[in-house]
Every structure is written in structure tokens, then in C-alpha cells.
Length: 175
Image 1: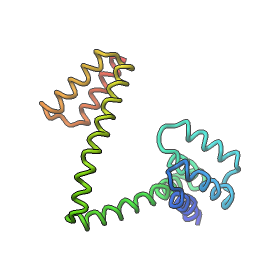
Image 2: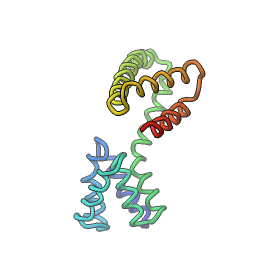
Image 3: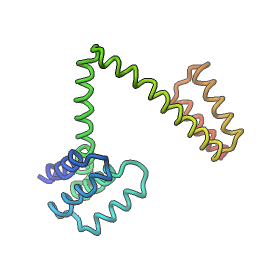
């Protein structure tokens, strides 16, 4: 029964918490503190503080910790699954609709508009990464990384994961 309660404590807030982790925090608090009494308000606020200090989405970190304290490893897994399940269900539903209507002119036109927007966003992101690289590593290291990455990806067709790994090694050696 505890696993069902863990599932509901995280599934319901993440269905209703439009806006991601920060929007669902008060809803999770209502379930964890108010409804089930697994923690005090003080303990919950400490979990939120610790979650905010770590990288990544806060909702899954909180779910993993609270699920673990209440139900062990299986409880942690169930809580994290319940946290991402609403988004997963929505994405699968949207993909089913998209696949059903993929040949319609409206969907094709939508794709024509989305591709350039994605290209522009990726371009801006690339520029920001390059600027941050110059600030963090210096001009010459950044030029070497960019040129070597471009050469490996385009000319030698090296898988991007290996290029990233090589860049990490280069950063570890020179940094």
C-alpha cells in the first residue's frame, strides 16, 4: 500500500503542477506533509533546499529522496516514475496524434515553420557556448576545440559522443 501512496503523492501533483518542478513543489508538500505526514514542513523545506543546490530538475530529486525514505529503492523508483509519468503520457499521446496526421498539409506546413526556428535557436545556443568557452578556456583553446570538433565531425565522420569525450579529455588536461 505504501508504494501506491508514493505513486499518488507524486503523480497527482505533477499532473496538476503546470510549469514544471517549481510549480509542483507546493502540491507535493501538501501530499507529503499534509496528507500522508511523511515529513514535517521543516524537513520538507530542507529537502527543497538540498534539491535546489544540486544540478538537474528539482521534482525528480525530491521524488527520489522522499520515495527512498518512505519505500527504499523501489519507493524511489516509483516516486521518480510518478513524477515523469504525466509528461511521458502526454508526449506519447501527442506523438500518436502527430503520427496519425503526419501526412496532412497542416502538419507539413507546421514542420516547415518549426525547422528554421529550431535552426536559429541552435545557432544562438552555439554562439553562447562559444562565448562561454572563450571566457572559460581562452581564445586559443576555444579555437582549437571548435576546429578539431568540426574536422572530426564533418571530415572524419566521428560520432558526436566521441568528439564530446575527446573535448572533455582536452579540457581535463589543459584545465
